[in-house]
Image (cartoon, rainbow, N blue to C red; front, side, top):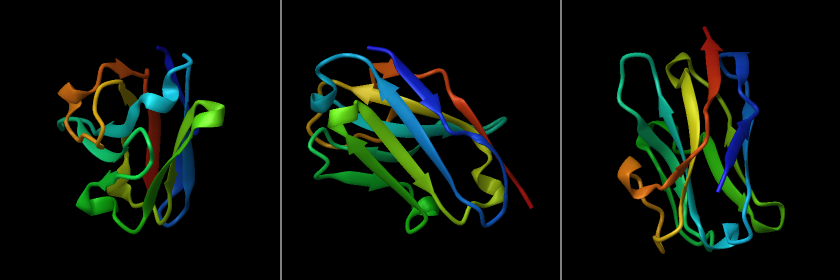
Length: 124
């Protein structure tokens, strides 16, 4: 499985971005998907996750109400809509896929496949 992220960039605080992650493979619909981020000098954290069915989601507290994860099985793509961006959202954002879980895991070790990352920079 290959994951390719896109949509990162430089924005001002309060603006929006939508990240996309295109996945190869016919079994995408059976994967739990997540977006992680890693800021300079910090550990990688799960920003949002979605179960294979889309029926279960997870958001870290700092993005609740601002970010939305969604999954389009027909397009083999998972999205992260990011609104009201803040400078503290600045990080490299990674897409990840888990072919085993039925829920929406939030730990990096739960995910088997990873994208190369896309930089998001929010200026104040």
